[in-house]
Length: 443
Image (cartoon, rainbow, N blue to C red):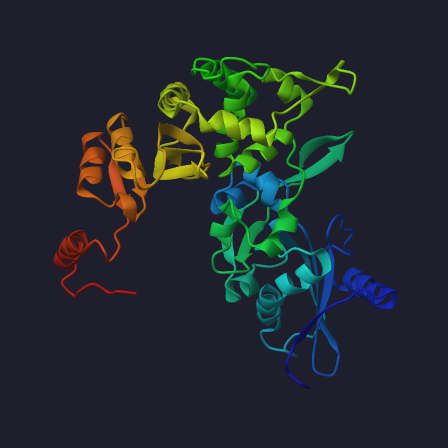
């Protein structure tokens, strides 16, 4: 027998019928009945003999260990969930011992080839894989051998949809969660505001009405934004607090351009728009449409943000963020976040959810003295109580003054150092060498 394994997507009716029959016979859970994007693949030897079957489909809707591992908040999960695919069935057809290490070989081959096959069929490339292993039938050794990552156990609940509502009922059968990235930087891409072109189609899923804050927090945010000075002398049909609330929540969800802010606003439900005091749209005769609340246009957002008093905005937003301290975690990252050339803020954000804890205004990263990211970030640190907090930052903030400000605020720091920071890098290497007499291993 030719030991080279081949992978193939099947779609012909006669092969699908054969696939279903074999899966129903050899898999302990029986035949798969999947909805949404689904792909059935077979593994065969050089002679065309079927060795194993796999069914891939949509990712699990709620899976806290996966979302925490990726670093998703609720809005990102809803927007990027199609970029994660689930190995729903894995059925071995070969007899025991007939093909050594067949299971792990198939899993490795699937991780390498499935993204290409998925892109060809569904027009977007997934970035991440997940599956569940029933410990009553398998210990998951093949997944470990194929370099999949275990994330612990499920809680043993199944999702049931009834009358457009989700219910979770106990199934008394917790399973092991395994995940695998399709590309080396999958985690970074799943959190990046800029996806590769071949992934964009998979990020166009329905995220309507998904906010990065609770309804009560959205209401209090609106009240806080009412205190920001409105520079407009006339044409105030759209409250400034409405636009600023949308801007803040959009940036919390990863928006980094005016267009992304506007798109976030367009995804708000009518009830959410009403709560943000957006005005009724009008028909062609000028009559208000009572059931439709209009989101400001891209141009309106752009013009408003262009002249916004960022210092005043940053102060009011920081005050609101401090008022939410009981709901904010303490593992923080310091970074600049810019809506292109229009506005920018230096943010101290929660590493897991991306939610800002405090912000300061910044016009651009380079240029105006005292207004760029580094001094603004240092001032932001001095204004915080960082007790029991670890602050992470990139090489731009790898400065002695930044580190001293974090320590003075009772925090700890983890700062990146690059080779162009010769003195700091040499000092850090000397400290590390003193702690490790065998020397520093450089990658």
